[in-house]
Length: 233
Image (cartoon, rainbow, N blue to C red; front, top):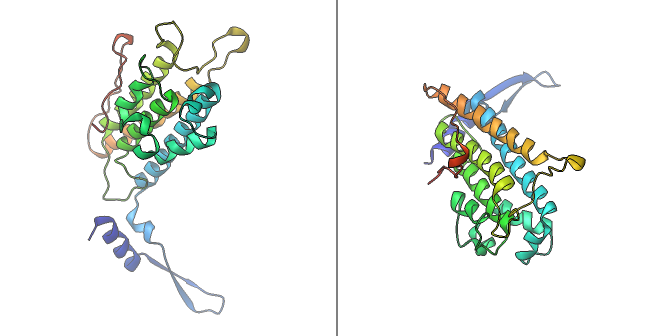
């Protein structure tokens, strides 16, 4: 039996509580997840949700600033383009040729890539986050995480911010428009949201390292080595 199914079965049998009903009789209620989730599991659930929601927010903002990108994919609307990313299935993004994680993200800044650059970058970051959280949507007491994968994912958010602001085509144009640096209309909302996600990932990495009895040390990259790090592969 799958370990998670076994946990839920045991919890379903054991996690019961009693209270007095309106008629004075004792009533029994069950809360299966109460026994199979630790506090850290609940933190991991919330942490992952925040990171994934934040990445989808960034994707939406990038499409708003770069509407030509979703139009390249031949979809009907920005919302349809976002739905392709939520599904994260290679069949819904055939132009990426099955690329995931850093391979997909790098396509967004490739001179030769003619497809939807927002989709390439954000699918890359979303699948990096999937790998960092062990490809799980929910966590239970027997699940474990790897702080190095979480940390590498956080650094990749930093790399994405740098590339959005610096990587340019041969014609000298940014591949994707993000932050507006014009003093008259300054907008750093992309950088702020990426920074929030980095903080969440580093926070989770610190918790996991402590749980695993290991020392947490924040990685840094220099401008000269701004490359996407491996997370799942």
